[in-house]
Image 1 (cartoon, rainbow, N blue to C red):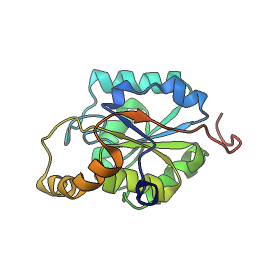
Image 2: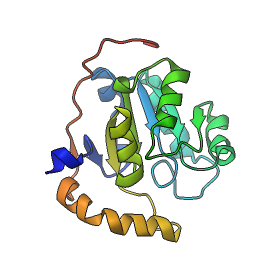
Image 3: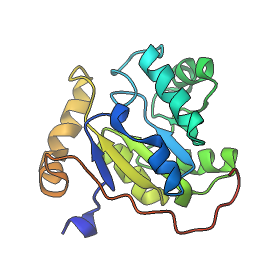
Image 4: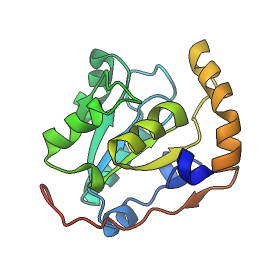
Length: 182
């Protein structure tokens, strides 16, 4: 049943536990990053030293980070611009417009991309619909707006049935030839 519903390709306790060189070795090039409760606690406007280091590590591994957020474009830019990272705000997740824009602007394909986020019904659904691989991470903070709490309640059965409580990584190697940046 989970195969037909979709299951994240990997589930990590935190974005800070992902091995960026391992993703590069598997052929991934584009890393699409949610902001709220993935990179930093919900609503924060400035990157922490840990976020700065994470993005530095990503780039050092030969990966192209793009912030892909449903936050207003201005807020997303206040996070991404000082870090010199392409930012797509108002991404429209679970729609695919933001993914298509990130691919177009980087010259990379969705097959070379991994979308990393903390919500099944926005981040993971966008990745599945957009042709990306997906990594679900546990949220960084329980402090969120009421409507996100509601979405998380609706996600609970799916999360329990398809994801479970244990972390895993089943990301396959990229099967399409490299194009764009390499």
